[in-house]
Image (cartoon, rainbow, N blue to C red; front, side):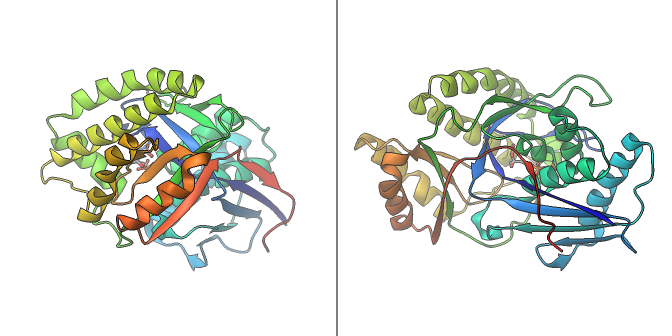
Length: 329
Ligand code: DP6
């Protein structure tokens, strides 16, 4: 029996992915851009030739859609390898609480893709791994490599040209810091998957979102190249507002913000006016992620806690998904 273990970090989008042109293959309407985050990580072990297929995520047996997505990814690797991989045992564990508001699915599917391809004897190929991770969860395509990555929308119906590539490694901007602020740990009513689908179908602003977000990606890359936090921060904030504005205009409306979210966000212009460089981004949930630099981390954490954050997780640019020597079991 052969088991293979891989580790990947989650990522936070600075230009968001919001909406699929193909829901089955997970192909986005627009390109998007993210930063991989350490020290948060998910470790996934894949054992081929197990007695029966089982999928364990954070100590719990996965069922339904969650399990089906994992099994489908393993089957896709089997097709590429030219042989059925048979019953497979998957065990995946994250080192960060769900309450941090950062989805563990991106890191989980990136680690699963890396481990399963290696277990099947396929060559190490970051594009193929990113494409594969994408089929589990779109944002997972961006967790295969570290640093700053663009997930290219592509134009082919089969999705072969829709994968993430690395623009800058984690070493490019070592003093950049991200603080994940927990203002609400309640499970959100509408998942990203359902929320983006409903936005595509019912928001009159959706076409404008697609056009704008696509154009922001090269600008985000340029701001990172220059390590220009004021430009990157302004861009990340307006892109998050525009994603939420598009979702608010869906029918029924999708409001992921909570009063406590705004309490944190409204403090930021005040902090900037006092010379503290801090900006936010916000996924499809209530918990903001704040961008700043190493020098200002303590001040930004204090600001977030005073504004009502119950927990703050400090993150820095993270590295590539990689294979680990020791199996989990
Ligand atoms: C708001 O990648 O979780 O976090 O492809 O349906 O699994 P699926 O969605 P997912 O959506 C992420 C949406 C987002 C923005 C982003 O990460 O780009």
